[in-house]
Amino acid sequence: MVATVSPTIQLSSGDRLITVAGGCFWGLDQLYSKQYLGHGLTDAKVGYANGQTDIENPSYERVCEGDTNYAEVLQIAYDPEKLSLNELVSFFYRIHDPTTVNAQGKRNRGTQYRSAIFYHNPSDLDTIRSVTVEFEKKWGAPIVTQIEQIESFYDAEEYHQQYLTKNVDGYHCDTHFIRDFD
Image (cartoon, rainbow, N blue to C red):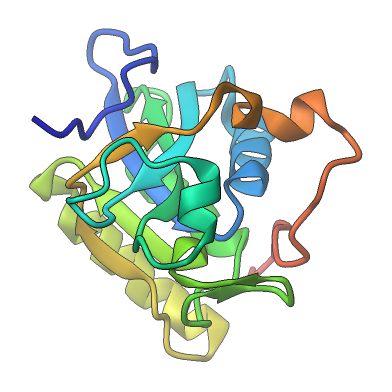
C-alpha cells in the first residue's frame, strides 16, 4: 500500500496534516519552519507527492528528470488548537507564485515545481477553496494551484530535510519570500 503520510513525521494526538507544493521544497521548509515552528507547527518533512503510481520511492535525481509527475512538497503536521488551516494556506499563497504553471522563478521549471495543495481530509476543502478565492483577488491573476487529495507521499533523502538550515548558503528560489498583501 502506498503511504500518504511521511513515515518519519512526528505526530501528536490531535495533529492534522496538509501537504503543499510551491517550487523547491527547501524554501517552503525554511519559511514555514521560521514562521510556525513552536507556534503550532509540530513537524514538517520534505518529500515527493502524487506522481506516477508505477514509480515507487522516487529519488531526487529521478524526480528532477521531470517525467514522474511527482511534486516536491512539504508535509506539515500542525496542532489546529494553535495554528489554523486558514493561516497555513494563506501563508502558502504569500510565499510563492501560485499564478505560474509548473514553474517557480527562472530556474525551477517542470511538474515537480508546480503549485499544489494536497489535502488529507476532505473536510479541509472548503477552507482551502475559500482562501484560494481570497488570494486570487489579492494576486490579481488566476491562481493555477492544483487542489487534490493526497494519494502518495515519499520522504526526500535525509540530506534534503531542513537543507537550508544546514546549508545557509544553499540555493534559494527567487519566488520564495513573504509577500504583504494587506
